Image (cartoon, rainbow, N blue to C red; front, top):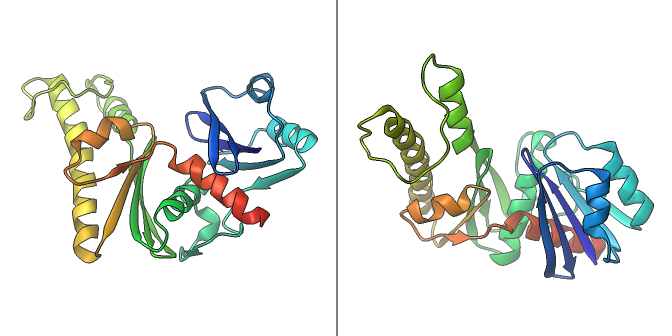
Amino acid sequence: MNLIVDIGNTSTKLAVYKEQKRVFVSRINDLTCEELEKELSGYKIKRAIVSSVKELPPFITDLLFANIPDVHFLSYRSKLPFQIEYETPVTLGTDRIAAVAGAYLYFEGENVLVIDAGTAITFDFLLENRYKGGNISPGISLRFKALNKYTGKLPLLEKSSDFSSPGNNTTDAILAGVICGVTFEINEYIRTFKKERKKVKVIVSGGDGGFLKEKIAHKTYYMPDIVIDGLNYILEYNAK
C-alpha cells in the first residue's frame, strides 16, 4: 500500500492507497508522532510520498524511514509525466506540482486550469503535457485577516453566503467585498483561459473549493482530493 503525506499551511492530509484506489483519508490540524502512528496502524505500507509547503518536522522523516522501505520526498526533480516550464522550479510549491499531476492523471493531453482555493488561491495551467506555471492570490481567510489587521475598526469575519451586495452594513460590505471579489477573480481567470484555449477543463479544489464551486459561472470539476490523487500518481510513476 502507498502512504500519502500532504502537509499544507493549516493542516496535514494523510491518505492510504492500494495502487490507484483510495482506501483511507484523514485530515489533521496538529500532526504529532503519536497521531501519525495511530492513523497508520493496521496498514502495511510499502511506499510513501511526502509533500510539504513548510519545513518538515524531523519526526516525520525519522518515523517514515524507520518503518517504510521506499520513501519519496516530492520536488521539482522528481520524475514527472509532464514538463515543468517554470523559471524558478526550486521555489515551486510541491502541492502545486501534485495538483497538476492529478490534473494530468484525469485529463492527460488536455488543457487544464487547476484552481486550489486554500490559504492561498493558486491558478495553475497545464497545456497538454506542459506545466506553464500559474498565479498565486490571497485566499478568503487571508483577505478577512488582512482587513482586520491593517485597519483600525474593521472586524474579523469568517466566510458566509448570507450577505447583501452592495453591502448595506459593515459586515455585509466586508463579506460581499471578499466573497464577490474572489468569485469575480476566479470567473475572469476561467473566462480568459477559455478564450485563449480550446476544450479547457477546470478543476476546483482546496479547503474553500466546496464553498466556492456553486458561485462559479462556468462548468468545473470539483475534485477535493486532486492533490493526494496526484501525489499517489507520482509515487506510482516513480516506482516504475
